[in-house]
Length: 334
Image 1 (tube, rainbow, N blue to C red):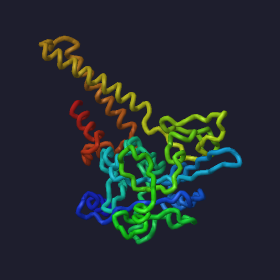
Image 2 (tube, one colour; image 1 turned 30 degrees about the vertical axis):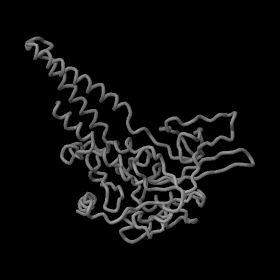
Image 3 (cartoon, one colour; image 1 turned 180 degrees about the vertical axis):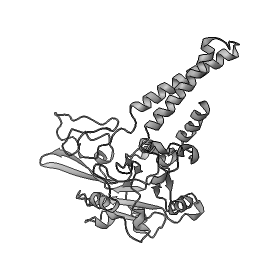
Image 4 (cartoon, rainbow, N blue to C red; image 1 turned 45 degrees about the horizontal axis):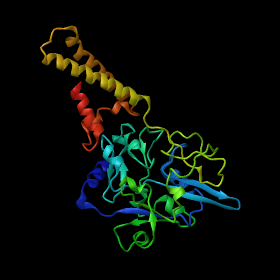
């Protein structure tokens, strides 16, 4: 009931009460990772995944070297692509502007992971549902600051209501020059970085060598440079969280099977219109289309982290999601 009430409130624009955001002064960040540890402890995040972390970039030649820190967390976008693509509405906007998640509605399709341009969503290995930073909404409801803010030893994080012009975060954003991650995406991120170096905040600038602290890189930013031994002072990522590719061979199988099904159905329809209704091809085409359509659905269901919830996409659809629309089209096609 509480989750349902939160969802209802999240869709009521007239009940808007705040617009929470972060201002992070990178000139104060020392890369201690206290925020990462506090977040893990607060939300019991399993090993191997994180709601927030601190990316580290090094550049320069000795003795003129720099180590740059960039805390990474969900931007709670004004135009959140993850919320729009979620086929069951598991992701929703609260009345304080936070994009939150109802795990009971999540089917584990990983569409939100693909849609998020910031790689801030992951699948919890314990619950098999999507998880992300929600600005510690549970703490705010008890008049507490987010865990990462309360433990930061240099107070580089400022949190508050961006719409309240008297709040510290709003005054900082108005007064200081800031940068956001991937502004070209037009998502309206609400995490503002002060004193950001372009080699840290733009993912394609710093080279990504194979480092012991990074482990295997499953998902490399598009256009990320390779290390050049002839230029040892170039920026390079020293620490970052690796991300697995959300979709793999199942997507290829889906496109192939759906294409065969559609082609067979189209062929059968053409033969029917031409008057050929008794030939083997005319009779077999609809059967082939139905068979491959069923195989397509089976592949899609198998790829879900919660395949037993696959009917949620039909019983509680989010009509802004093309995945939900596609599910109904696939059902009608079958």
